[in-house]
Length: 209
Image (tube, rainbow, N blue to C red):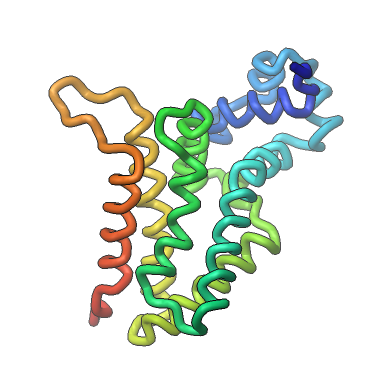
């Protein structure tokens, strides 16, 4: 088996530490120590801590975005107006697939997604590029056609809710169960329940002022 190169080791270490401690709670020294690299390696391979954060997040998110894009392409090839349930499954399904239960990598990715959603540091949210923006806009357009009664603001809120619900569910799956509490359901059953729940949430009537 090939030995991971320094860049990959730094990415692995940074993913672990950013997921556990957030952007501001993670130092370059802690990353390079865990990676077994020297301090200058972060600057050499990534330029800065912020660029390293962006590289870590992109490595996690890009396969999810690619799957979301492929799912939407498949739906639109069948009909110009996919139903809400199909859109939710194409959008949320890759989040489940990218953060599988029973996998340490899935656990880290779950924690990292929650960090992106909740970390107050601007650097935790400044990683998006054209691919992420494009797929988000395409889904927004498709959902807007399927849900014409929703305002732009409410539709944006509901789409953010898909990320939040899925990430928190995956995070809970990977955490040690609290004594006396029910162990979260994993696998295909949890995926189906989440899709059904999110479809109902997305399809709810608009909230009037």
